[in-house]
Length: 286
Image (cartoon, rainbow, N blue to C red; front, side):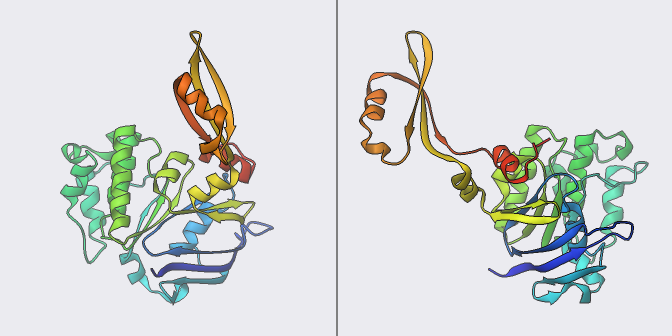
């Protein structure tokens, strides 16, 4: 597996700011993985994304894109990336299909627009002006736009925010399929379900620095409690008992409970991604 982006000691300051928005962060994004960048608003996530897609270039440190200096790349770089901004940008007075045909004109190679729009449930609304679309429809169309040029790398910001569960499931399935074919995804979101379902690794950005890079599984093990909680029905009410996870197979009290009581649920003490987000960043998920 290659390295899509190698970022070392990245620093950036907006001209109007008195301090750096990005304060010396180092990380890499592997080819064929979904890499999530999480953190509270204002932590530097969007700025990092803008730097990686060459919208901001007045930074210090080094960034390599598949082994090449990002600053040295010309506009052919945009043939290889797809970008879905948090706020969908379309021409509201054009229809959805007219928008997609217009944006397709920027690229040398494009996908089957009809196939993508059908997949996300928008083909039947292709001749409707985008200004008449709901928020969720605009987000789905934005996702189609990000895939128009058969990208090698996808940058997605709040890709399912405002989308109903059924269509969010479709989008997440499409992202998983993109990854399975070798595509790389850089994801920023506040939706922890998306993180847990999609991300191979995640990094937390807090106060313009990275404070943790790991897999969702390892984070759950790190921040969770090694215990098992059993809920069972006793005398018409729900009761519960907690047992240490270590040696659970030889715990007589645990075994006896399973054999003698009407069990309702059994849960390990792993933390949710929302809980981990709060523990790492000190900020509640909104």
